[in-house]
Length: 446
Image (cartoon, rainbow, N blue to C red):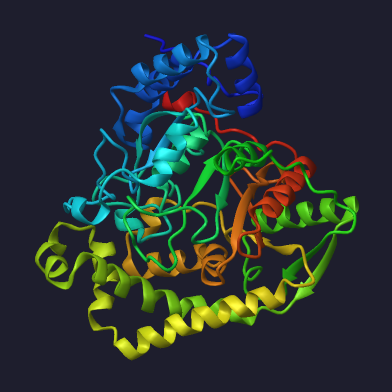
C-alpha cells in the first residue's frame, strides 16, 4: 500500500506566510497541527525524533483557531505547531532529560521559556529527544535511542547534539520550526528555570528554525520587537580565525566555506584574518567544568548509585567530575571569565567572527562504536561550536550545503554577548547570498 505523506504546512513561505494565511483564514492551526501529527506518525517510527507526542495538541490548536475567530491576535507565532526539547519542562508532558533516571526534582515545574512560547500562541505538539542530560554533541543516546539523520536513509548518521531529536524534527518537517538554521543565544538572555541544568553558568536556550528569517521572527516575537532585516553587506567586517576552526576541513566543508566567503566578499563584506589561539583552550576547560557541574547537579550519591542506568558514554564522561579538584574547577571557571573578556576585546572592531560550524559532515553512528575513535571525532565535531559558548558569545549556524555538498554543512557566525539582533541580521544576509538550503529526500522513510 502506498502511503501519502501530508504536505509540510510551512514548506514554502515560512513563518511570515503562515501568519498571514492564518489571519486570512486560509489555514487553521488545527489543520496545520494535524498535518504535522500525521507526518510524525508516518516518519518518526524510523527517524525517532520524538520522545513524547502531545495527545492534547489538536485541542490546543482548536483553541487558537477559536481565539482567532473572535479577533484575538497573539502575534506572529499564533497557531504555529512546534516541538520542545525534552530537557525543558512543559505542563502535561513528561520531561526525561534523555535519561532513565528520575530527575523531576531537579527540573521543577514548567519553564518560563515554555510559558512564553505558549503566551505567543504556539501549539506544542511534543517533546524531542535529547542526549542524556545534554552531555554530548554528536547526538548518540543509548538511553533513549539515537534519532536518524534524515539526509541518509541508507546509513544511520549522527544527528548532532545535544538537541538530536530537534535537529531531526526540523530537518524532516515534523514540526513548524522546520529547517537547519540554529540560534545559540547568550547565556542569561532567556531564563532557564524548568530546564535540566547541565552547567548553570554556560547553559543557554535557543531555537532551530527553517531559516534565519524565521528565527528573526521567533526572536522578535519573544522579545516584543519587530524582526530584523538582513544587514547591508557593504562596510561589514568579519573576522576569520587563522588557525584551529579551519584546520583539517573535509573537502566538501572547505568547498562550501570557500564559496560562501567568496559571495560575501563579492557583496562588499571585508574578511579579516584574526588570531584566536585561545579557542583551543576549550579542550581542557570543558572536560573540567561540565562533568563537575553535572555531578554537583545530580548529587554524588545519586550518580554513584544510579549510574548503571545511564548511557555508558555519558556516565564515563560525567564520572570525571568525581575526581575534579576544587582548585582546578575554580581556575577553569576564572579562565572562562577571562576568555569572555578576550572575546569582547577581539570583536571590538569587527561585526563578528565567521567559521565552519563543524570540520566534517555527519559521520555514521557506527564510527563511534570504538570509544577512543568516538572521542576523537566528537572533539573534532565540537571544535566550531564549543568556543562560542566558552567565550560567552551569541552564535548561529546557517546551512550552506547548497554550495557543493550532499550532506549538511553549516557556516557559523559569532557576535558579542546579547547582540542577537545583529547576529540575526548577519545570518539573514548570508542566507540571502547563499540561497535556500536543499531539503532532504524523505521518500525512503515513508
